[in-house]
Length: 315
Image (cartoon, rainbow, N blue to C red):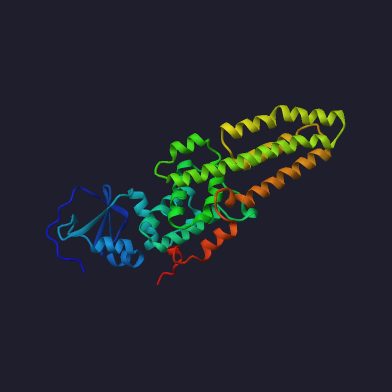
């Protein structure tokens, strides 16, 4: 039960058109937008909101006689969180940028009924299964970094290996510049794994160029020498100075090998080596980034109920 309040003393605010409950008994304010909601609904869904509402002082800011709880997030993010509390949102139809923002705010306020489906929607985008790998590498760097930061705090590390692979679309300097509040230990973990992937790809380049020794025909050897002296060597330099995306790099290497004038046997051998390396990198991703294994990450995501608070059932 809220204490009695006097006349409202608040700055000019704009009511939310999407979420204004006439029988609500508390107002959430995000910048210049206010949302009228129910204390009981917030308390039921979030221990954080419950504590914040209960700790409001008697002389707190008011709007139309109701206590105001000010939040630091944008009106758009607060609206999405509240819509998740009051409605069943189709998270699987949202883009990754939207999911990332809701992932962050639902974790901050520990709204488990929202956080869980968002987490599951992100797992569909960043799968932990080789056969499901099909990540959109156009996802913005800031979006990736937001999900990475929350995943660590929420013990949702199962999302991270594929997210780290996607970071390879950017140079190391771009990532460091955009890292912002990302913990230095997390950044160091990523950069270490990034270097390990680069070394594996550079070794693959050497292995492919060595396959020319399998065929003694002058035409085939000349074709492989041309590849080795041009495209493949340029890939090696790019891995040192530029983006390191194993998906893009392996695809480009395979394309270079297949357009050569080498014989079918050498082309098949190089393609097999490329596919084997792709599979090897995938299997070793957790280890490259200083985790134990995929099995360890799956176990954490599936059984650590104390840490994964958002997997609790809603009463």
